[in-house]
Length: 243
Image 1 (tube, one colour):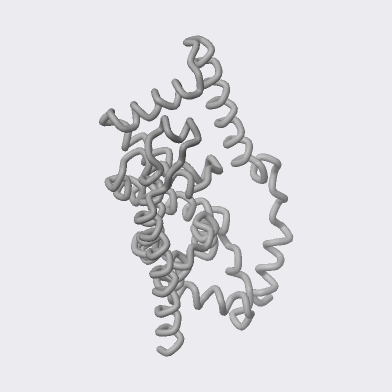
Image 2 (cartoon, rainbow, N blue to C red):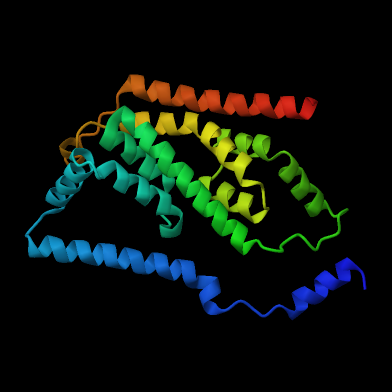
């Protein structure tokens, strides 16, 4: 019995995934948001707080407390499990903390990337390992593993969906060292541009009043960084193809 046939036999013998394995993460995220939203309404009604009052209290905690940046980083790190968009949190990092928000966002985003990568690697155990070495999927997977840094770096610079890249990297068993290094380097242009954009929205009172005025200089700088990021990805891709 060859290895390919043995792998198919193992797959046939594997028990079907349970309901919890299929939907456990979604149920946990749903429960979390039910607790958060329910807790907010309970607290707001108990203290007769309006939405603006609640937002001001939260912003004051995040910006004027020593634990504010730590809380932001932890929430950002857990974001993949809570199904919360990375772009919104990155904008909030600039809006709440200003330029220093770049540091807090980089720390949080790299922690969230590593968490999503670990989840993808856990659920991707033994996947693609039983394919024939000559198979197209296996060959492409091996290429990704051999050029992990360049591949992840290009995907980051192209602004591909953040969590999708994280899960895919873990699923395909890309080594975590080049993955996290490429993530840290490749995410800098996008992170800086979005944080700067978030920092140009003015104050919370202006946002609540609907008076949103984006600083044109910041907007131009954000667009320029995005263009530079895409240009770098094309340059690296061409250099990789040439080598």
